[in-house]
Amino acid sequence: MRFFSTLMNDIRYQVKYGFYLVYALISTLYIVALLFCPLEYRKIAASIIILTDPALLGTFFIGGIWLLEKREGLHKFWIISPLRSLEYIMSKAVSLSIISTLVAGLIALIGVREAVNYLLLLVGVFLGSVVFTVIGLILATYARSVNQYMIIVTIPTTLLVTPAILTAFGISHIIFDILPGTAMWRLIAVSLDIDTTSVLWIYSVLILWLVAVFYLACKSIPTAMQVEGGGE
Image 1 (cartoon, rainbow, N blue to C red):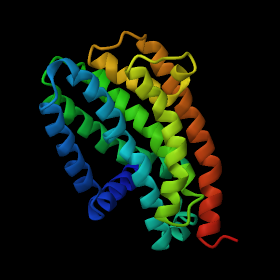
Image 2 (tube, helix red, strand yellow):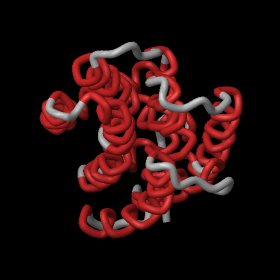
Image 3 (cartoon, rainbow, N blue to C red):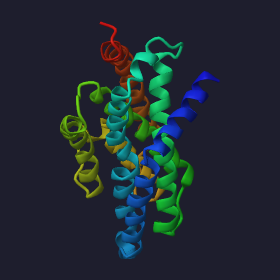
Image 4 (spheres, helix red, strand yellow):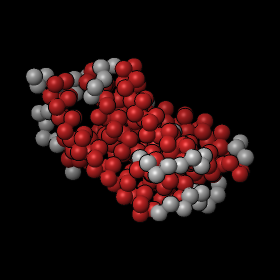
């Protein structure tokens, strides 16, 4: 019950600061672009758009959310609240990933207009978005401003996503397939019937990344909150 209450508060917070509006505007532009894309390239274009638009926007938004909370002094209340670090992290990741998942489904429904395995698509986007959002949250603890966060997050995100884009264009390597971006793209691509990679393998990679990033976040977030909340 405490987690769901926190989740709803995070969703209201995101609505208040216009995150949903930004998602809607950017996604509308991508849907329009897909509708004008030639049919033979539409699915591959959709897979890359879904990877880089709704799924990864959370990575950049989480930095703004962390810094807004820091500026408003909310972290000093989190460290004295009964809310566990894992619940805080999950609430942030899940709330942003819900938006990503809904937008991805909308892009596929309106922009692709062909047979899509929506279960695989939505699960893949949700899991991948959670991984990248938590990575963004960890990186946000090292930033003092939005501009600094954008510099900090850009290089790791690019390194994790570029192999997925290369894979989409037929340039693959075994190392690419252990990265979350590639696993996420492959699950999206399987749902669009343009890839035949084992779903079990893809899920295994994403779950391992989930465990790793949540472990690191649970180590770094409480320390950062203690410092920013005046715990020193």
